[in-house]
Length: 365
Ligand code: SF4
Image (cartoon, rainbow, N blue to C red; front, side, top):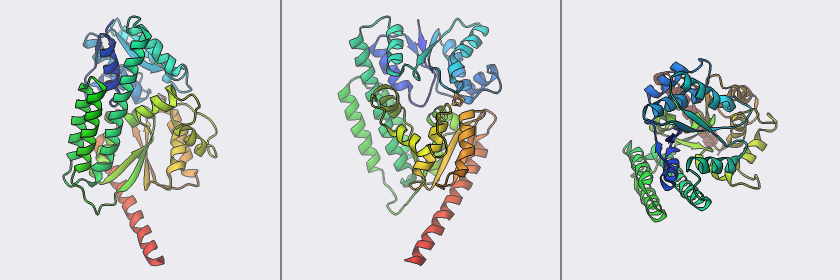
């Protein structure tokens, strides 16, 4: 069996590390591109959401590279993610590929779903090797996320635009190539130091914008028009609660007590939405309520036709915790130029709001 994975941000890095440590035959599809989206859109039912189309595009590209199986998160949640794997497998069969879509039951079996999948694709490797590979993969994941968080802080205040992005790209490459804990630790310290030393505008007080919305589009830059980098270019500091390492460590796999950031977010959403509505709709409402005082504005990323995010979008204007929200629908029909114009207008609005608040404070002081 030669396995593959769909892309979602830098998730390929820990998965690749696990495959290598367990001696699994694998291929990583090319990074997401217009071709991936075109392939996925061409063979998907039109009304499906962009995560389905992008991951189908990845599967077709993987099949072209010789893969005959793909690992795909799934489960029995409320939204249509639960149907993805069977429908995608059928489409691939109709296209003539002898391809198996292996569902990882992350929503129902969590840690144990991932372990069963690894046992199977590693040809029954012993548990101690599986656990050791899994642990190393988590260490890589957490390192990339920490570097990314630091990059988000540096981007809006760097004097030479693009420096943080270059360092981030180099760090991701270096982390991908590390093969032991010591090198990983050194790589992390080295890039955090370099990011710290980037020459910055010390007077800058950047606007802070939160990013919320559906998990896939929040984490996969191609599907969200690389919105975080674009905001960085406009001098905005981006904050988001969703990182893959946080999700794996606390929300799904290793959180026996259920006390985590997600619980806080759900509690915050409760006056307006009392239960899970599938996908990340509950979290989108909760993040607006929870962070309304910390952020200057919020960008809500929603795949076109995603019911949980449509519900969240409609609840957000009626919360008493007020903060400007820009909802951006992500779909193959939306052009990046249009998104950039809306981003610029949104940032302009936030700057005016902050100037007005500062004037009021000066007058009352
Ligand atoms: S949450 Fe929305 S975009 Fe994600 S799989 Fe479900 S319906 Fe599709």
